[in-house]
Image (tube, rainbow over all chains, first blue to last red; front, side, top):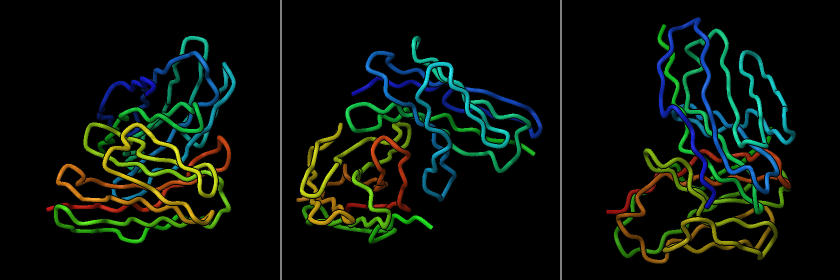
Length: 110
Length: 111
């Protein structure tokens, strides 16, 4: 079982503010890192699949960076909106499967 | 529109019953997965399959078995349900190392 840590466990953000949070994972035998967004009463949906060290991906106001050498990834939300409220999961891919972190739950206050 | 469907959204069973959870995907994906989600623990992998009739144990396979007779269908079986198997069960599929597509989940309660 890979040790995947996400911090913080939860955070509250004022609407319009920007925020970021971290995913840490073992750097050895790295293949890919996935980020998913999981909204209440819905299924997890993929945000990014990242493979290269230094990779940076963006989707709207959400972006992510990847450091495979030190084993971490940051996810950024710029100008948070209420619809960004969700749990964000990261998961490194290894041995045909993903190992999910426990997630960071973001609550955006209007 | 890609789809992963699960046979039930909510299920209530009694201790000792045999429980079948079905998952079907229409994307011709090789890989299929069963997870359970419990508060504070994230998604934990129970079993996965990377081909028809192939199965691999995940992180928490005890008390579960699976069946993959056709590419599009992956079944999770609880041979004798217990109260500690009360959980949300999610099925997913993917091609190679690509993103996983999740079903809507089955909330199972074992009384």
